[in-house]
Each structure stands twice: as C-alpha cells, then as structure tokens.
Image 1 (spheres, rainbow, N blue to C red):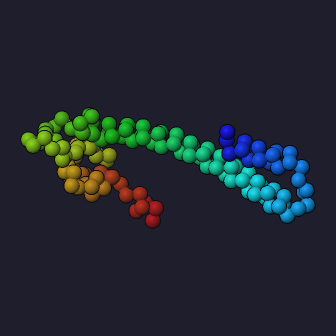
Image 2: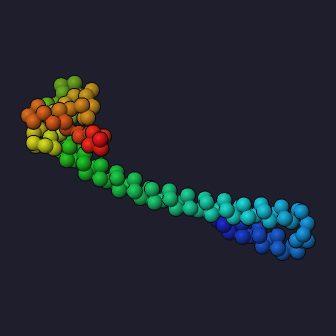
Image 3: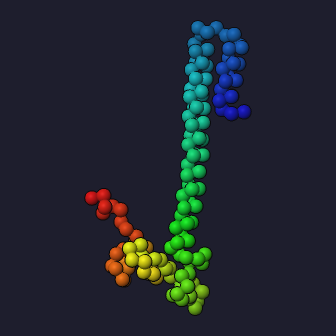
Length: 134
C-alpha cells in the first residue's frame, strides 16, 4: 500500500467513525491527515524526480564511456605507441588526442588532464570553460 493509499484509508476511517466534527480531537485528527496527504504527495514527487535523475545519470555514464573510448582508444587505456607499456605492469601513463591539432599526447597519471598542454600547438588538452565566460 502506498503512502497516498494509506492516507486515504485514514481519512475514510476517520469519516467512518462518525465522530463529532466540531470536537477539538477530530479537528486535530483531520489536520494530521491533511499533513500526511501533503507529505505523501511530496514523497511521490521526489520519487519521480529521483527516477528521472537516475535515467539522466545513466545517459551521462554512457556518454562518458563513449568519450573515454575516444580519449583512451582501447579498453586498457593504452594508445598502442608503447608509452603506456610499463615493465612493472603499472598503468601510469595515458594518451589522448589534442582537440585542436590532432596530435597524440601521452602524459603521466600524476598530471591532471586539465594541466596537459599539447607540445605541437601549445593549446590545453582540456579547455577551461570559466575563461570563456568572462
């Protein structure tokens, strides 16, 4: 039984008791049932919003997967140029294509992608949107 159904049940139960509608207790019970109705409406609305957000996050996750495929070119994050092959078996290198000139850029995992600059054209791998807004 949903919250809405339980609230409707309580309202029907109160009416079925045929209590004196002018008494303070009945007024209090009616006010409480009205508040429960408002709460159940709000919970239902939040549940719908959460469901919508879950769908949106799933779409974003799929889109991010597509971006990762483009940036890292294969499942292992290796570009095929050999820079990612570590003798210790550590995957501490990443490669990406420069969005400006298409140059392949390899960088260590200790460097944030936002800090990587293309050695060919000098432009950042990830553009800062905050500078464009100014």
